[in-house]
Length: 309
Image (cartoon, rainbow, N blue to C red; front, top):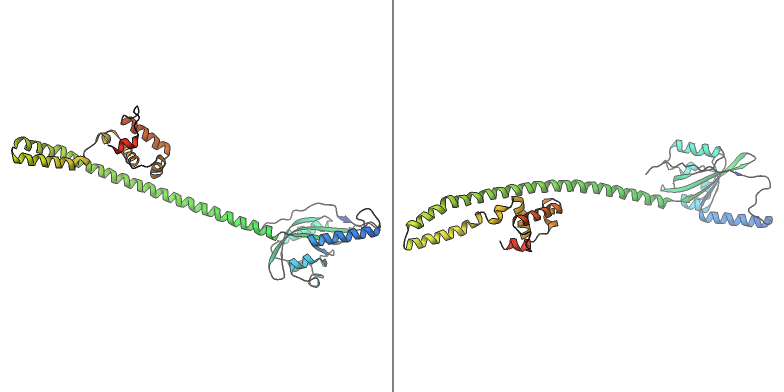
C-alpha cells in the first residue's frame, strides 16, 4: 500500500512578535505556568520535534525517542534523513520543503524507519515559526497511526482474498454447471435408449409373440392348453413393464421424468435443482401433467395418484 499523501493544510504561520508570547489573561508568572502545562499536555499526547531552518533536529520529546528508538543525544544534531524509510519519493520530499520554506504549514502522512529497522506511520503537521519575517525553526507535531495503517492494509489483503475466492468459486460453479448439463444430456440419452428398447420389446410382444400364442391357444386342447395359458400369463407379466401404460402414452418424456421424481417424494425446488431449471418451469410441468391425466377438476394429490399407478 504505497499511496502518496502530501495533502497540505494552508495555515497562517506562527509569527513571534516582540514581547508578544502570551497564552491567556493574567500576569507573566501565570502565563509561564500555562505554557508549561500546555507543553506537558502536548508531550504526553504527541510526538514533538523542533528543527532549525536547515532541518537539523534541535529538540525531541520522549515520545519521539520512544517511537524512533533513538536517544535524544542520537537525534539532536541530525536531520530527519536518519528516519528515512525510502518509501516517499524525492518529489514528495521536495514538495514538503517547498511548502514549509514558503512559510506555510504542511500536513500529511509519513512512513519512518526506527533504529531497529522497523517502520512506523505518523500523521504529521509541520509549522514554520517566523520572527521578523524570517523562519527561525520548524515545529513538527505527529501522531502514531501505525496500527490504523496496519488495519487498512489487512483489510485490503482480506478484500483481495475474498475477491479472489469469489472468482474461483464462480469458475468452479461454471465448471460444475457444465458437468451437470453434460450429465443431464447423458441421462437423457440413456433414458431415450431405454425407452427405445422398451418400445421394441413391447412391439415385438404385441406383434409377434402375443398373436402366435393366441393362435396356439385356439388350436390346442386339453392339458397342453392349460400350459399355454400359463405361458401366456407369465409372458404378459414379464412384458407389462415394456408395454405403454395410460400415463406413458399421455405424457412427454420430460413430463414422465418429472412424474418419476414426484413419485419418489422430491419437492419442486429439488427437481428444479436436479435439472438446473427454475421452480416455475417445474410448476408448469406439474400443471400440464395434472391436465393430461384429468386431475384438474379432481381433488386428488398428484404424488398419491402416481404412486398408485
